[in-house]
Amino acid sequence: MSKPIIGITSGFVKLTAFSKGDYCHRDYITSLMKAGAVPVILPIVPGPCVDQYIESFDGFVLSGGCDVNPKFFDQDPALNCGEFDTDRDEAEFQLLRGSMKAGKPVFGICRGLQVINVALGGTLIQDIPSEVDHPIQHDQKVSRKQGSHRISIHSDTELYKLLSSQDSMMVNSLHHQSIDRLGDGLHTAAYSSDGVIEAVDLVDDGLVMGVQWHPESMTVGGDQRMLDLFKFFVNTCSRKKQANLEV
Ligand SMILES: [Mn+2]
Image: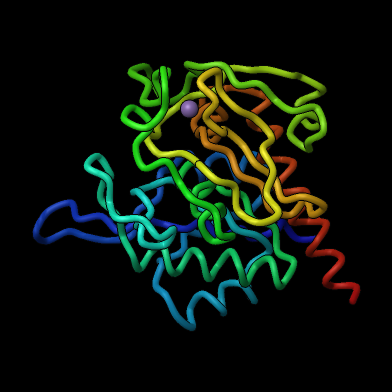
């Protein structure tokens, strides 16, 4: 069977007055290819394009990027909320909900995890340093290829199983927002020592998972367990693709 084709969402960036466009960090591409998929970067525009993406691709990575507009969880922007892109928020909510309906796997990374949570009715901590008691450093100063803080992993999760029953590990950390109240059907798969939720999966599903760290950069840094995470996702996409062909 041919390799699964995975769409990766992008962010809109302005480089100069003459250069602006749709951006996706190369590490997502490299990791998905290493895991056996064909990656495609998706320009993120709300509307009919997204529905066509869902029909055409075998799974989706919701990538990292700017903050989520707090209006989507009924809050005004806190003083330390960063820039947001409302069009991207809406397009990614549409992509997630449509993929769930169509049974296409979704892997949310960093902002992607937060998008999944808000799309399912959850709320976010808009700025960890000002809203969490005794926060650890979630905006690490070392290379994004290496882990900087520890997470604890719940033993009743896919994450625990696919990491060979490890109950803790080191992850990198490049975020200042995180999940506050969980969205419908989500449960916590991992958390850091200050109580910040670092991974979720969708109860009784196995098709939606999200992590707050950046496994794509640790994979490129040579971390085998992070590559296993991508292989798990890509294998899930292959399995679903096969099942859809047989229908
Ligand atoms: Mn973190």
